[in-house]
Length: 460
Image (cartoon, rainbow, N blue to C red; front, side, top):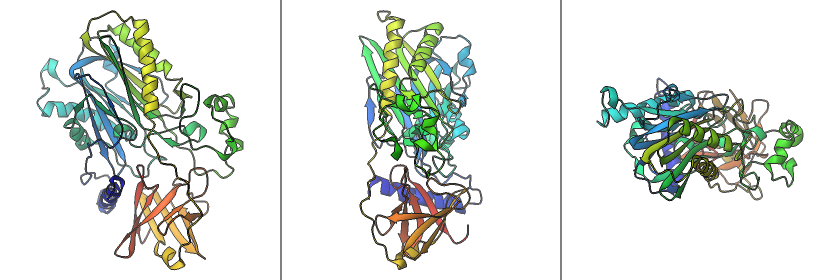
């Protein structure tokens, strides 16, 4: 069985347990996954340890960046909807290295539990204590990966945070759809709604080290150094358009139906955030750390366009591990190198995604289609009703819009195999039916790394 096949089985069993539980919010049956499943950034810096944890039933996750001997940290928040923990203490002007970790998490505000859980985990593991100068200090920020991104309300919790804390690794940072970036997306401002994730990059000038870590869940679109859109579900009417600047120059027209297919496949997801951390081993005072944070955060507007919008919770942390008193690299140079390193990290966040290019439609017998008829629950407020008529399979959203499916009228889906179908249009939402002992037990939306699992029920 492939990795994603195993994830499907795990997610289906977890979702089934959740829906049949007396309390839908019960996450006790979820299994933390702390393994690395894709690309990584490898860097030589023993002071920095990284841990990731994922609930594949979400999917959602968290990422811990721990400083082995603490670090001095400042914060720069710019978006219109930030979600942070313990950031007020960073504005007091102290440059002492007393922060243990920065944590990024999915789950929106509910993911803040995972940030504080890392602190209690450090205490319970005996690394920190209740002594005044030994209390664990952890900060972090969350992204919104609910709503239009996924259909359930699973969030990174204390159990997942503790599992990730016990799986810390030095010098390895997972890239793409892993950790806190497991269900991140970008480009919703222009209707791109493309999957993104977390990225990392590392540079060294002599003995001075710089590392950038980011989770891109932005309203704006990721843009490369040539000004091109990096990843986007393009509107058919765009033609050969490739430059983000062309979209930006035509706002608001580039966001209107005249720039998109006449039949939109669901409302683009909103509530976005890019959370990031820039770290150096060079000793910096409070003012120098603040300047580093400000320049790097400002520079990110080149790589994500537009940046720090009303719907974004953009927050950047800047840290010094205080290991090196070398001043051979000036602040002007350091901050500029760090800005370029962050652009590298943003580009590295884009996951590898196999294109979906269906061939001619596949003929499915009427008797097979009838097996799929029923109601499928994907979350507390996400239900799909599947019907069959005259050789066609149709899908209707009952409680709220679900990707390409809405409640206005049933969407006729096109078969690509006996069990898998897709909705025509810009986003080509796929639905695959799960069989057990000759009976349909559930369905999977968009099979693969970002799949959403649903359980078949007899009543809505």
